[in-house]
Image 1 (tube, rainbow, N blue to C red):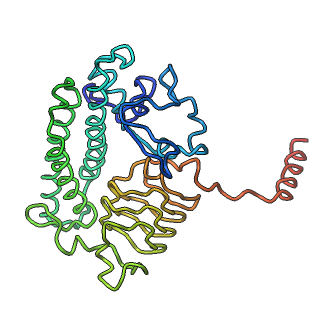
Image 2 (cartoon, rainbow, N blue to C red):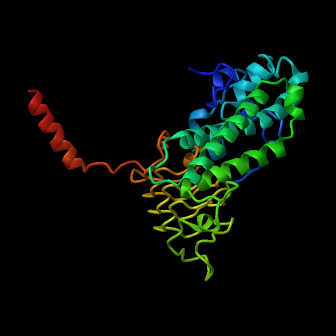
Image 3 (cartoon, rainbow, N blue to C red):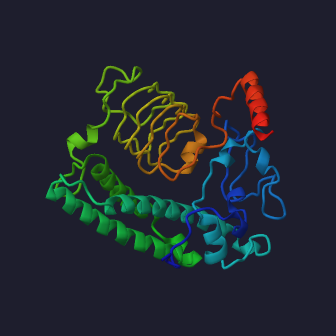
Length: 329
């Protein structure tokens, strides 16, 4: 049964006052052809709270808009926090509404990751898991449930309570919890306090990226912009928050890797294997470049702009058409 108090974590634009088109600001870049100050409506926002160029965003240079995901924060702020009051008809609510949107999006993204962590931690462990790992899993599951409950309660609070929340403390709590859950899920190796062991922190980087210097190939830095990682074995790697912009990950093995918060804008993941990768969201795939050979995590979809499967030669298509016509005749 669905908990009525739990917010929906998918965008419902029809119940939102276009907060993503107003609240955030952006600068002219590869992701946006124009600049916009925070709190100012985009020039393409219509009076109906929809985008007048929605079907043309990517070809017109608004790539940043196509990969943005509010995780349902827009409708939660519009319909719950502000009880359906439109910032256009209630201009006094505009500033706090826009500030609340940023807070709510952080909370909803946390809930999204916590839900994934819970699902994985609650799954029956392998029969050969030591009792210490099983106990650690149970302890983490209890922490996930407690943190989820507190976060859900905050998403239903009024605007003043929401804006007074200690968001940095919330981020630290969730980050620590997800990091420990990730270590257990990726390697099963944690210490008595549930922290990843030294062996667990380095596991999963069997290949040597050619452009990472002569240091330990297991110690990937945070800045991997343009890194050449094609074909590298990154199974179970800890890639949280890594800058993988324009990185070459073609054919890389990312099974079980933790990609939470990794920046995949322009990353080439054609032929990569992301089965079982942890904390991947649709927006990350939408920002990357892949093809029909990219293997996706469960529940995520192949972006429409990725390379389509090769078409059959015209002659073969003609022959198939003729043959189909013969069968029908």
